[in-house]
Image (tube, rainbow, N blue to C red):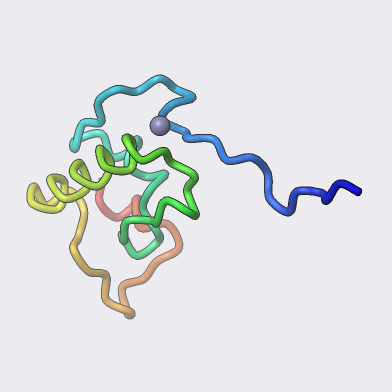
Amino acid sequence: MTRERKYKKRHCKYCESKVDFIDYKDINALKFSLSERFKIMPRRLTGNCKKHQELVATAIKRARQAALIPYIVDRKNVVESPFDSIK
Ligand SMILES: [Zn+2]
């Protein structure tokens, strides 16, 4: 008896698009790994591989320093698509 897989096989989005370097200015690339409150999504949810998760994490931290992404999002300021507000 073979059990059906509960979840799809995970693909690393960055491996699929063959990214070796993630620029902190490229918010579109970071989007995949950010939650709606600008937290870094854990690897178990995004399916990123370890290499890319680390790249993304450093890129996000740099982007925060450069004020491209907020560190914290206030409950009142939570909007449906927060990326619209930072353009
Ligand atoms: Zn990867």
